Length: 450
Image (cartoon, rainbow, N blue to C red):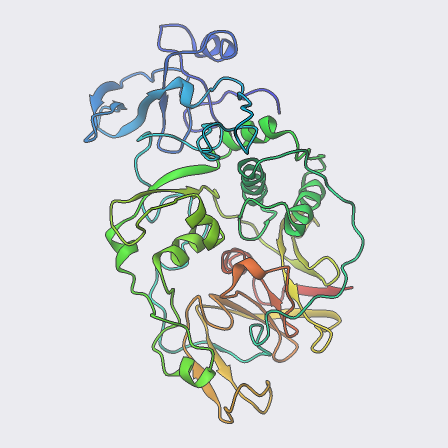
């Protein structure tokens, strides 16, 4: 973990060497003689040689780029110090031991600087699940469950005792790097926010179960190396597009279900909400790391999390651990594919016990409110069909279980996952629920354990 691995252009991160030296020589000299410039691919990887048949050109921003014989850009020139910085200088006047001048996100160990790979298009590979690319249907699948958002502030019972993980004077940026590392590994920390909470702790232990390796969350340099080899640094630049700014957005999401039913969609309410969900971030954290940014203006360049690719595979068994407030997805061989923080049941409306099965999967479902089988919401005494959308009661996906009215689904409040209770169902962030839904089929078993 303490060395960079070498690979081909299609593989992991490798170091540049502009002379006619062999790629091995350039990579071996990384720590001994740093180049003054590097070439970075659009995926955030660093070349250790100039591929045959390529030539130099300038992009529309004036950056020197490598192009293939067909004119496609394969890498952009950047200053090497932005990628291989000196050891951090600790300044007494800084609140963060890794950053001077008060810019806690200015350390290039954590974020790509300058116009290296350009803006990230809406369909870029870093979108694990672009939840807002498709219009929400006006009819179709509707869920009918005990709703998870009726009282999201219910206090959870005291969690089961679990080992304590202590971070040693880690900055928020270092915790973000840890969260992104876990997210890419398929052990979700929930909404990425730069805080070391229970969701991060649970993800660390899930990672160790998945890989059989012990993860030291205090070894930030090793984590950053792994990040560079698995999709690039944890923060990247993103340019807000016309589509981002245009929406469409909903002015406000009402509390009353009758008012919800009168809307045509329960879509996002703002650009920041949509982008935060796309990049697996807490909305407040997105605003925090982009002070003064106008998110409504196309062309605005902001910093976002780089969560990496979605997990893939065939899930055959799901365990919903009520005590850990976590969902584990296993393949046919018993291997752990993914783990997600979850809100599972409450004292008043507990989740079922034993084993059930997934009966069907619906993406962008509506929600059917029936006071006779659900609960009394306000003064509503009639059946209401509430439209789909990420701000709907079941979020962007509904996995119906064989026990009536129960399911696995998303949420309009991702930052509360694992911290509050649900009314019996299994509630995940929208991006985690969507990822899981794409790996399950009807018949998959779901086991509830205490």
